[in-house]
Length: 305
Image 1 (cartoon, one colour):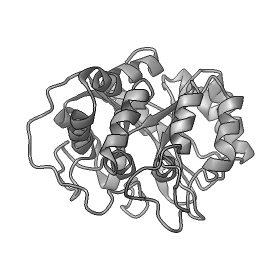
Image 2 (cartoon, helix red, strand yellow):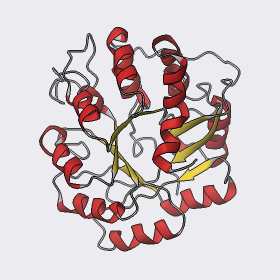
Image 3 (cartoon, helix red, strand yellow):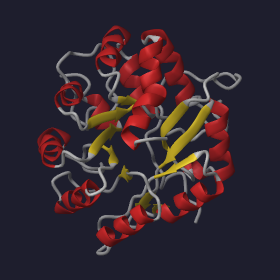
Image 4 (cartoon, rainbow, N blue to C red):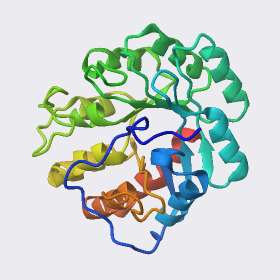
């Protein structure tokens, strides 16, 4: 099934994101992209592999997106098939619609089939929904990483980051929570606006944000730097970001969530999210910090790449 652009409404680039000119591949075959999708704005599997290779990554975590109600559908079976075709490029995660009665059984079956983590968790459910807790109980058995799309507001996903996330971090210590998307990165600042005001706040960061604190206080909390939200969070205040990435260098994951077709911005007017982030990290982080973000943290989370 081909997913429409409207159905895949993933985290877009904020207004004013810089485009990327055509460039040779980044000279690092060691990078791991921790957040990528097939069918992202109708991109097929060969173009998805071209994105991995064109950006200069060794491999990528492919995240399914199963949401029967909205028509947003990229199944775990398709991700596992991609892994069979490109075993040296694809790290398969699983994800199922938690509103299906058989979701626990299916997660265990996908673990047996070779999946390495869970996500992208992205359905219109509040974080305190009992089905999210049941999912976390299952993946605790495997000690998996789990990528959450945090987007508050009535049309959002996993809503209630301020009210409910910390309780889950305390309860499910074996799960490696990976924060992603608009509300996660809005809370890099202590003055994060309500979602109806902005999901992409700009300007200087006020220290003491929820994201900063959770990364510092909980060993099982991580963040992926993908999409427009991740780029804007670091680029809006580069002096703050330089200190942020230094302090959390073992908690941050290079990730793109990018829909371009070649790792150079083809078919995407904002340019490749990955290239924009690489350029930013080259400005604000030293070589050791970049090595942790580009690969080392991913291998620690996965046990190996």
